[in-house]
Image 1 (cartoon, each protein chain N blue to C red):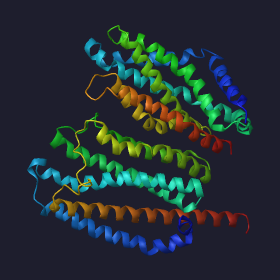
Image 2 (cartoon, helix red, strand yellow):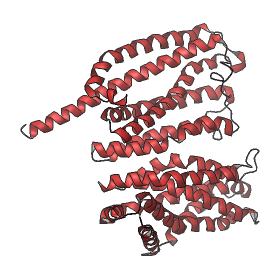
Image 3 (spheres, rainbow over the protein chains, first blue to last red):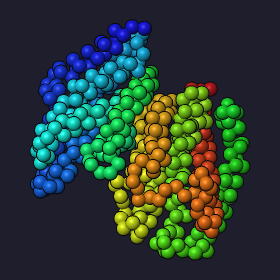
Length: 221
Length: 243
């Protein structure tokens, strides 16, 4: 076994993300656009916005992961790259994980980095807490992208699979979303929420690659 | 052991008498349990009076919602490992029935919740959320199967999704301890034996077992239909091929 195909998959996913059109800016635009719609929908009362801000960003993060994930395996299925990946010596789970990780780094992590700015627009107090929250968004986003990757791999051969991905992946997002939202409140019992959030991300990292591999073998048949 | 059940002929001859037996037993137990629950047992004023009788519908559906998802995951696992076709037929039959039971669980829970807790729906209740998302998992499972172009692919994709989704079922259980909840903590199965008084317990168990038998009967009927469906498709294909 050699690790070379795994790095190749990682680099290819990075290159795809940056190539063509707005590239990595597109998810940022979607994320910001979704979040900016909310004050227009629920009114501009600062206290309300401050209360719902963190949650809105979780929702926006989940939605942008779903929107951008549709293509990551579909393109490979269509142009035959998937068959080549499966013929390499590297385990398919590692290749799927490398692709998903690259996708998270280009499409998910920037959203977490942008979150303090959006939080300020939602009337949050400027403090280092916003940076901590950004880290929470990054950790939760990792779980979102890996579970979403399972949905994307399962619907890789389905035409217009985007809607299917949402239905499949959203239930899997729930624990992460709950722990993530808990981590940003100071309700009683939320002290452990950051650890549970991290645990849910680690769980996704441990389980999702194997589910993705099984689904990709199915897609290649 | 699984291989013994994996034979469709054996399944057909077994379910030929087992399915009617399940219907009969389920009907008797449910009628007795509901009659006891709705008319005979005294109402509990601490639990909101007559509305607590919803329990005899709600609690069994909640048990079955969880049990049906577990069954779906187990059947998917058996199919995925041993490729026993009957297991896939079972998984396909369980999904829509499980979705219906989960929906009834949510509906009766809302009806019970409004007069007692003063709300149709409580978002910070982890158990409600888990059951709701279990409902979505069932829907996603059915949608994914429907989107695949061959039966084999539908079975494989469905099995992967059901096994991944199965992590949701333990979460439901442990969320009771993990979150502050409107629900009371477990009161039927505890380490020190049932805490519920016997007057409620027996009708409740009767309803639960009755609904389980009804569910089992419906699954078998669905499976028989599916097996015959597949056989018809095969015969038709043979006919077209001139065999």
